[in-house]
Structure formats: C-alpha cells, structure tokens
Length: 578
Image (cartoon, rainbow, N blue to C red; front, side, top):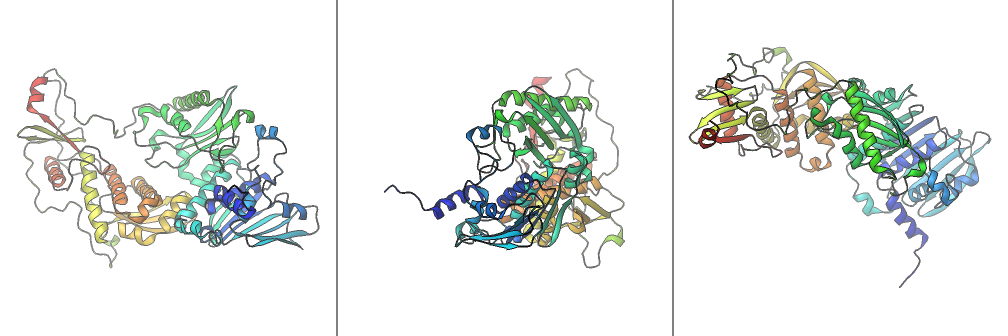
C-alpha cells in the first residue's frame, strides 16, 4: 500500500546518506563553521567520535529562533531559489546536515551572535523535541554531538576500529584546513592534540604545517591561467613518488573533490620519471565558473560534474607537464622500473660487450652491525637473515649491472632479477617471523627521528604491540614525529631508508584489510622496503647464496605482488641470436 513515510523514518533515511560515520559529522560541522565566517575552529572527539564530537567556532552565531530552526530539514541560509544552485560558493547549502545529525545522535548547540547580550542553548535528540533556554556563552557556535548512532545499533555496529575512524576524521579535518590557510584550526582526540594550526602566510606553509617540513623538498609549484580555469598548487618531485597513494588532493572553487580522471591527468606527464606502481603527491586547486560545475550530485559533495571535463583534463595535464619541465626533471632518474625488460640485452656485434670488472668486496658487510653498546641486555642478538656457515661454491655464475644474476642450467641460461629475488626471500622470512611472533631486529647506529603526517603518526603509535611484533622499536617523539631505535633485519640503516620503512609500515597499518590478518600485507610491504634498500653489486659467492636461498623458497618464481623473479633463455634461443 502506498503511504507517506513518517518524518522520523524519512529523517533516518536522509541521515543514512549524509552521516555515514563520525567523520561525516566533523566534515559538516567544520564546513558550516567556515561558512559562518569563523577565524578559529576547534574540534575535539572522544573514542573516535562514538562518544563525543565537539566543534567550537567564533563565527557569526545564530539568533534563538535560528538555533531551533537549523535542525529542521532543508533549513538553510545559503540558497533561496533554484537559480542559486547554479552559483554555489559556500560549502554547505542543502540544509540537511544538522537535521540528519539530530536524527542519529544527542545534540546540544550553544550559540550567540556578537550583538546579543545572551545566547541560547538548544538540546535535541531522536527521542525528544528541541528544547531551548537562554544562556551566557561566547559569540559563535558550540556543537556537542553525543552517542552517535545510539538509536541505530546496526549502523554503530558496522563502524570500523577507533584507529580507522579517527584517521577518517583527520582526513576530513585536513581537507578543510588546507583550503583556508588564513584560519586557525585545532584537532584533539581523547585529550591529545593532533593538530594546532595557526594562520599561515601561504598555502605552501599550511601544507608543511600539516604534513611536515620533510615535504618541502618534494613540492613543485603548478600555475596555469586559461579562459576555462585557473589552476594553482603543488605537485610532488618525481624522485619522491611513493607506492602509497597519499597526499593527493583536488579542490574546485575551494571545495575538496575526488576524480579518477583528473588523477590520470596529473600522473600522465610523469611518464617514465616514476615507476608504474608509484604515484606522486599533489595539492591542486581549480577555479572555474560556478555555473560550469555541478557540486550537487553526491550527498557527501565529494564528487562533482564539470561541463568542460575533457578540456580541463588537457589543461591540467599541460600545467603539470610545464611544471616538471621548468624544474628540469628528465627520465634519467634511476628508478627500478617495473616495466623494464626481465632479460639483459646483448649486442649483436662480436666483442661489443665486456663483462664488468670483478670487485671482491661484500656489500652486505657493515662494520657497525657489531657495536655491542647498542644491543639492549634484554634483547637476544638476532640471527642474520641469510645465515650460512659455509658459502656455496660460485660455479658458473655472473653478476650483470648490479641487477641480474646469470647462471647456467642444462637447458640454457637462467637470468634472475636480484631485487625481486631478495623481495621473495625477505617476504617468506618475515612471514615466518610474524607467524612465530619472533621479530628479527637490528639496531640503528643512532636513533632516527621521522616526521609523519597525522594519519601515519596515529597509525604507527596506536598499535604498539603489532609494530613491536614486526620488528620495529618506535617511540613517540611528540608533535607528529617518532624516534626509530630498531628496524627489522634486512632493512638498510640509512636514515632516508629508515624513513621510507616507517612510511611503508604506516601505509600497511592504515589498510583496513591488513588489520584483520596483517601478516601477508605487512610482510610484503616490509620485504619490498628491505629489497629496495639493499644495493651494491654481489660477489660470485654472494650471488650463488642468493640463488640457493631463492630456490629454497616455497614460490621462487614470483615476487609477493606477482612479478617474475627469473626467466630462462634456452640454448636454442641463443643460437638463433648468433
């Protein structure tokens, strides 16, 4: 039977579209604070927003009548007619946020306009109508959201872990803080300060305040001004491209949005400057005519539709290409490219190839590995990752370009990629140690301080037992930094490689799938970092040991991510080439 839904039910349905998780509440309230002309916005959460979300601003505030009316659906001061939808410049405009929040939580609003002597407190919840009373409060607005989803237990049940929900809150907070460097923003979690951002003189300064000064050397300025759009912001130096898709932000008319298409426009100009599996950082701002972009196609307003989508793609791609060109980046940067040939190419002309001279030294030897003062008394000395009492004979083996090992078989020549072989060997060893909960540690020569983004900082510090079980000794240094005293066996102890190892660890911990069964993903990421940090040529004995260890693996032919570690060139193929 056709019927009109009761208002309570329709409000719950609307809340399901707008309020997906605690981060949704933070997004709506912080954006409203900015729309209200605030110069300072403070966010405080308890239990990742489950227990309390409080947002305080010094904006224009509301009258007693407006404070009650704001909780009605479609109550808004941002638009008045259908034509206004074509010229939206504010962040919120639908008037659904506060009504949706009040449908799934207990809400208290305390607000006052600067010209009023007294303010008003409004209390509302799904089980009771709005109640208001006059109170003495500072000018601005103070929203307290308690017991989110208490009346929707199914929604509350499917929230993720506190660490995952807090990271989502931090993401939403950062997206607003980036677009308004002229404002002050503060974020607290369970009484601990995560961000305290003072007004910044420039967008670049705000980016560095949020993501750390280490990012300064990575940023390349982008500028373009056309009749369709004005583009500004920063992209990452190709040398600092990461496997983790982090620090990637698009904004249109100072509103955050996502776009896989525009992501391709940014990545395309990098070409072979970065490996196929890596991705650059970017902070890009598009200013377009509001009438040529529709921001009203998604409840969370993170997707937009451009009237000039393909021209914008080309403009954005050209702007990135120009920025890279001005900074003289060329494809000569030495990366281990996934798309490189698996087999070394030999020239046809006789005598044109000369084997490299043999240098008898061991790049695996580090004279600082045996400094006794750096090993804690309570920590047993770890066994080396590649223990071997007597190295295997070298036999017919050749090391080419520090990248390949070539050895003979009955059917032909076996070519092994050194880094990929190490990746597989490290992976199986780490997987074994994770299963046994027996980390393989090596002390750093000196403690290494690493600055992290707030998301990475939280990910690393909120799971200390898991981090320790993997083989890291990481301590909080405060203000978004950590101190690394030990790393898993096999990693380079070079400070920059240690930093990359911690970033890889944070990326694995941020992956929600890894939290249920972290072993495989963590082992794969650790192995990739350890293999990347192992450099230098191999002696024939070391090359033979590498081959022996590889063939002792359960799956020697493939890396954990499915790339070939080796290939066979048959004698028949060689004869055809000669």
